[in-house]
Length: 358
Image 1 (cartoon, rainbow, N blue to C red):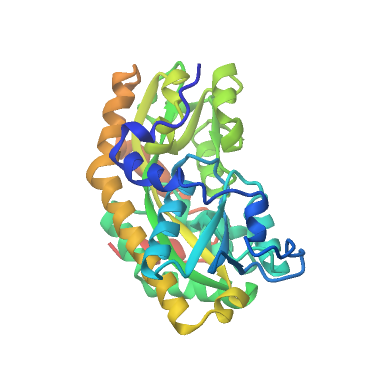
Image 2: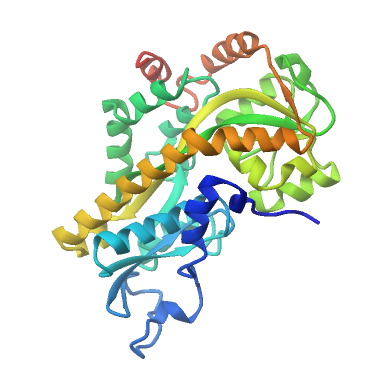
C-alpha cells in the first residue's frame, strides 16, 4: 500500500502538518461562514467574514497533505496569530479550482484572493514569458546565488510587468523549495548521454522540456496527481522533481535511483489580486505581509536545517541508491544549450544578467 504523506516522520512534518490538520482547508459549507448568510456568488469578492474573522481564499495546485498546502496552512496559522484572530486564510488545495491559469481567471472574477505557484508557472500570465528563465537548469550556482536573484532589481522589473498587465500584487515567497533533481526506475544517470531515449516526467515547463530533449531524453508532462501511477506502471522511466516532494510522495516505492543534480532552485510564491489587496486596511495589509515573512523564514530554515537531509537519509534507507553525477558534464552541456534559449524563451540578455549576480 502506498505510504502517502510522510511529514509526520519529519521535523517539517511536525511543524507544518500540525497546521494542516486544523481543518481550515474545508472547501464545503464553511465558506459560507457561521452567520447564516448565503454562499457568495461567483461575481462577488472572495474576501468574506467568518466567525468574526476576515477570510481570504488561497488556491493551491498540489494535493492536500503535501508541501505546498501544508506551508499555506502554516501561513494561515501565523496570520491568525498576528491578527489576534481577526484574519485567516482558507486553503483550497489539490487543484480543486484548477491550475494557475484557472486561479488567475477566478481572481479576475473575484472568487479567489490569491494563489500559490512557482515562478515558472507565471509564464501563463500576460507579460510573464521572462519567468521561463527561472527554471533553466544550472542558472543558479547555489542557494546564495538564487537568493541574490530574489532580492535583485532584475526580479523586481519582471514582477512589475506581470503586476501591471494582470492586476496582481506579488506578495513574495512563502518558502524555499529543495533543488530539483532526477530519479529513475531502472537506469542510473551519471552524464547527459545516459538520458538517451528515457521517458522523463517533467512539469509543464518549456525550459526543462527543451533541456531534457537536448540531452536525448523524451520528456513527458504528467500532473503531480498522476505521477505515482505513471512511475509504477512504467509510463515514464523517471521524473524531474525536488527531493522533499519525491520522498514525501512515496516515490521510493517506484524509483531505484536518485541523481544529485540539484539543477534548479526555486520558491513557492504568492500572487494576490489587486482588488483584494486594496480592500484591506493598512493594518490588515501589515498583518498579511508580516505573517508571510515569518512563514518564509520558518519554513525555509526548517527545510535547509533539517528536512532536506532527513529526506535524503530516509530515501536511501528505503532502498533508493544515491548516484553521484558528473556535474561538470551536465553544467557544460546545459550552458551551451541555454544560450539557444536567449531571445526565444525569454528576452535576450536576461540569462547572462542573472548569471552575473553570483
